[in-house]
Image (tube, rainbow, N blue to C red; front, side, top):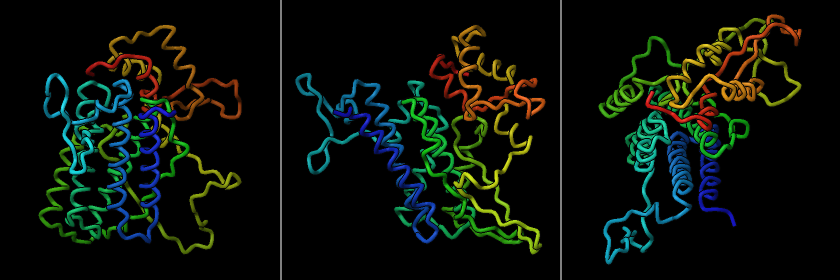
Length: 321
């Protein structure tokens, strides 16, 4: 029989996959709102799965205890008599207090909750490009955080099986356009700006992802049409050196210094070197740059992605940084 936490984990992944699928359907006019609602549902299920895993798989640990009678707990119930469980924000806050969840995830969840409330109560103006862009940025961050947490907590890699969210919902904003925001929209964008003030885009967890989209049209007959495909026979597109360094910002020295400040039990020893060697050929964590790319025996230098910390977090004890 499947453990309860595993069942919730499976449902969480399905909810996120559903959110992404709906968002990527441009003909569904309510897709931003549906995405936010399903993404929050996915996070609540994921946090409950983690909570159960940490508390012996006991469902009672999720129930809201309002009083005790004769030493026995008394749980708050719905109108149908079913025990109420703690919500997504409560669980996120508790896991942060126990240093099992990055505070940036909590901020992202808070922002998604505000968006969900606005959508449900008819405050969300999806025709405003600035708000649509904010939804995309929060959504991308939510997916990134979800994948990082699932890998960190349950050693399950979702990066290859999740359909990527596409920025097709954003209409190009004319440079001369004057975008009028009502009071509620202005308040939300200011609120989001405060939440992401200490964001680190290079970290495994973020509040929101910065999105920059540029559309360039060409009438030249030499211009090539481009589309995203999973066809293995399609022409490969290579990253520039600048893009590679953005994706893999740490060399050995920088990674080591970051680990020293991140972990209380970290030492530059055989364990550390062995762990690095394990993942040097995994593009999720590292990129090997050779002086002569065509010569496998050429001098090389390894650069590391910020995702490597989700791997190291399973082997070292995090401090307060």
